[in-house]
Image 1 (cartoon, rainbow, N blue to C red):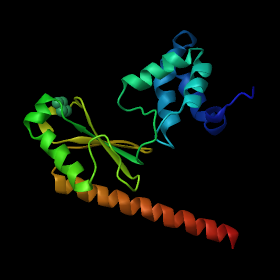
Image 2 (cartoon, rainbow, N blue to C red):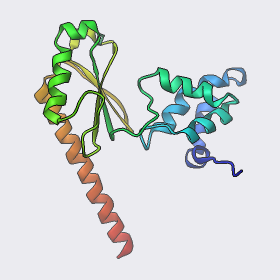
Image 3 (tube, helix red, strand yellow):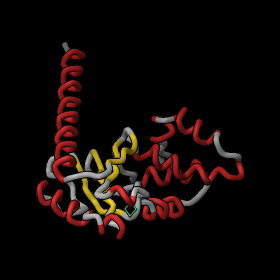
Image 4 (tube, protein in one colour):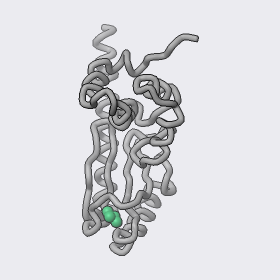
Length: 184
Ligand code: FES
């Protein structure tokens, strides 16, 4: 069987930098940053990634997969380009987080947990994000990292999504133009 080393080929230096931070006997602790790295481009982690991370760290695929299931920042299925995670834990719910989530999803024509039809944004409820007095709040996850948005209104959130949509469409146009220049 051909051994697959997608991550090792794509991110050799990043993997080495991560591993260098851990003494040999604690190397398995590198699983979290390696999962984050694996998710960076396509915004989810597939079975081959899990296997490769397990191989790098000398642990089983099942051990790696259990972390993906446990942490809300990791995904094992394709989702939107951006993930909006709205805290609906009790303190935030008391400040209207449930209503905020329901109305935001309603305005986008999706249910909580779903992705917009253009594949741009997945919106889901999560537990406490440590900004309990600033609800409604959410974190936006993308390949570039995590950003917090606090004291939000549905209108603010919709404007942000509109901006993300424009950015994504701008990137598509520039990629097309680069392709044309390359061919021309
Ligand atoms: S309960 Fe929502 S951030 Fe803590």
